[in-house]
Length: 109
Length: 114
Image (cartoon, rainbow over the protein chains, first blue to last red):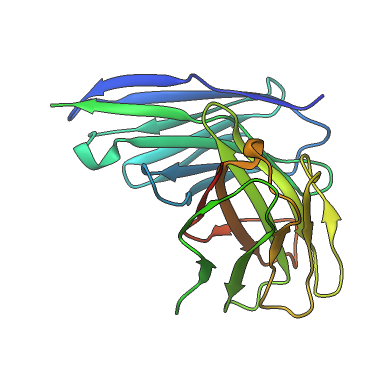
């Protein structure tokens, strides 16, 4: 079967750095997405990785290792507005997105 | 640009009643999707459409039907609602002209079936 695993909840301090991990087992791989979802709102796109390595976009970076079935999202200089759920999704052999359950990130002052 | 709109925002429905959730996009995306999101389970695909006139079943299609008469609209119908269909429903769309499948989401419909 297809499976995406990510921690249920993480807590971090404002101004710090946090890494959210995602491991996957899917039928085929055509890229990995990270989305941000604030409570009561729709998911919004953060990043996309299809090749191994690190993609940096401002305070957010995403890493992919296809051989290990592993990705992480790195958030630097955390702000209170970063409190949200972070969803990992893999595009499978049919180009459908398979979603993890999401990681709820709590930022404390 | 509105992007994707969904209606209604929320609804309380009696079990056994039917209901159609509406979804409209103005981005001329060829692909559209319906998901349900339940606590602890993440987004699960109900139905999808890769282009106008075609539809396909996702992971959890039972109890739901869709149609795609044109590019912009993708309604989701519950023929006879049951309490297990209580959920938040998201419509999404993507421009599937390549392998890249970034999906854009509507604001969601919160449905309670009693």
